[in-house]
Image (cartoon, rainbow, N blue to C red):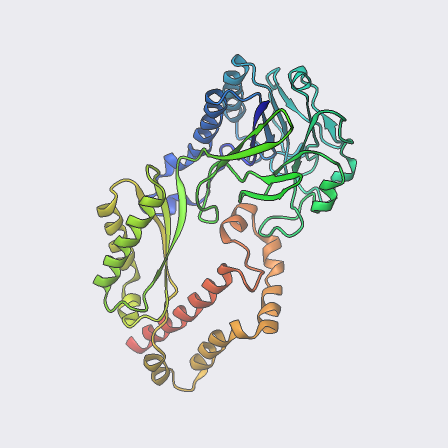
Length: 423
């Protein structure tokens, strides 16, 4: 029997751009979160006495500003070296050879499989365990070809593990790098595929195991819930069992609060407090970064929109009351709408009314919506990667981001209409 850890997408020292613009943001805690997640990963390996660790790409978040990032990683690997725990890893799109202008010599027990060609790890400890780990690093940040056909054939009589940084066919929300299918992976006759690149953990197959471990620390509201790694135990018959182990130190969630049955701001604050207590029970002991989305038909919509800043700060005050120092509101999005009976008479039949009706009907006009989203594809190509990650998948008509944006557009129209009437 042997035991190993499958981790990926650590994104050490990810810059977490833009945190400073949010009032009360735990900036320093968030900036150190990816490092603390790595510390937790190493401690888990030591506590559970694993035989080895594999990292399926994106250890780093791109080129280092200085050598501190690499030195921190080397320091943590030293803890594993003292326990004689080898590490095998590959470079993903964020730490591809073409992106890294700085480098440090890796510790002796850490093996980075080469770019440009697939290879098998050479650590003698793995051979003594009856394990073969195969993989290939990214040479370029945008590897668009299927790498799997180049991977070595399975070594007979041992447990074969494939390390791959890839967008498996059918996964959404990430750049389509090194795309492949489940059939491609099965064709290699490996026992376990340790995948990286998709930040949402998922078990894609159990025969063989094809697993995304997800990233080790959520970095923005698009990366919600517990984040960590998989602890894999393989018995003497070659049968594996998987345990998810959280490593994160701060968690993100989206709190969607329906306002349909509420009648005042005070009722809103009371309902929000109840929601916060729910989230605390879901993630005991973890600081939470929340995005609040107000949705539904709101009977007090005009009051809600009259002073959005005050409503946001009142909600932050509720969070401070429920869990002081443990809850941070990243943003409040008002996606609610006024009752039709309140809106229609004031809209009249002018251009504002036409725009309002268009936005309301757009979700039901699938072809028209798809055409509109296609026109945004050029914008997507021009946006920085960090911005794209926080925006989400805004090119799929069925994505929650598009639903929220359409509701937000309607709220904006009504807000502007109210402002003009007040002039």
